Image 1 (cartoon, one colour):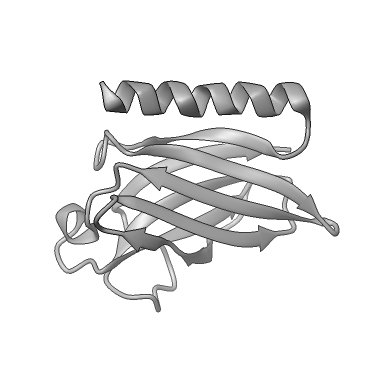
Image 2 (image 1 turned 90 degrees about the vertical axis):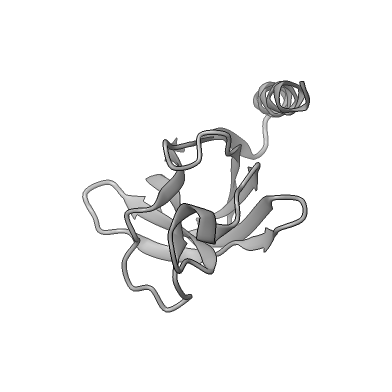
Length: 136
């Protein structure tokens, strides 16, 4: 029941923001590795760049997704390019939420979140928990 309410709240917020202008919001959906995970990607114009905010709900501890994982990292993959690390999610294990903010110069890209063993990852692991395409 609470999960259904949260999804409706997110969808309502998305529709309201589109109707009122301003930042763009995209629903972020979980993958088969974490099907209950959902959230929002917010994209705002910022001095010629885009401020990207990822907010996830129902995010399991990283070690439940991948053995040895200790954190989640968000990646940005522009069309036709390799992904780059956007940043580490601030994960709240008690609330099972994660938040990350970063900037990108790209208008069109895919944002995705992976479980990782440490913060020095140079490429994303195969353990993707959520993903969404963004077109500004």
